[in-house]
Length: 406
Image 1 (spheres, rainbow, N blue to C red):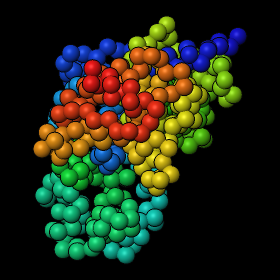
Image 2 (tube, one colour):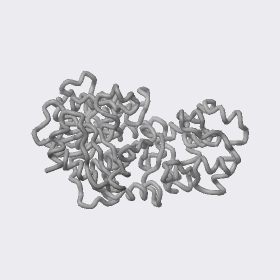
Image 3 (cartoon, helix red, strand yellow):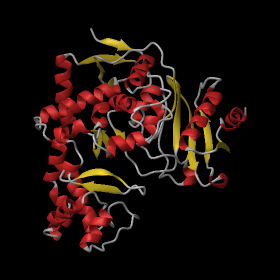
Image 4 (cartoon, rainbow, N blue to C red):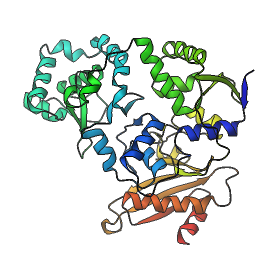
């Protein structure tokens, strides 16, 4: 007999799987980081820096005020715990996932023709690798300089105006012939040879059969979701349905995934056998647009009855809620959304956390403004800015201003 879950139960299971059942520690440590990474599985990387870089925010939402040097050490210092790869999209993933991404590296290798620069510049690939081998970790700009490649580096259109060196490095990154050793203060990628980035014991691991690679990714996606449809599982590591369907069948047969019915969900749903089923979740968190809890927007709507779209690329006069809007999670519900900007040059250099707009969700509890004010104060402290300033837009703005003043 298929087990059934209410939407509230499914929501709490999803929150627990993502780490929102864990209390925020007074002083987060590398152990806290490791536990949090186990929950999220990946941390999406994005260049938008209106508030804070995307990969830092999910850790804040779960761990609270942590030292961002934890993530730098985990991704750039030995023993490296995470490495950047095309895992969800560009993302930081645990280093032990490297062998399970072999099928993805092979996929890009088979599409070599997509990078016409390789055909147009025979010997360029070998030259770039030789330069990295000789010099060590470097940006594409540095490698291009060593080669005398004066190609355009304009960022007006993603990838269109890259130098030939940058395009070759993009290919070598996707195929795993180079790895990302870190990023500069300007967020430029530092490339290096994999043997100088990944732990030797990881590179020495045998490559699993392709079906086992797919199985492990689906297994991890299921753990991170707690409860999920096949579509949810496909999205987590950006897989193909033909890769995910057999893996789901295998995990159902082994008892690792349990078919369940969820209130209001039309598609088949799967519960991970080890998923926690809390009676209550007492979370309070602002969620990045790139947070794994909300990045699959259809799932977000099913779980939280919350329609969410990022409006960065929407013309200002057509935006409904703001430029960089974060959902506010309180308990086990998303109760509000706020447009945020860290204005680090304001207040004579002391900085301000600006809230251009604040909106309450239907049925938001009475304490929403007070709880949101407390979270914004905490976020401002973590970002190192002096104060929080609320604008005029949104039905929650006035009450939020009063709560901050109080």
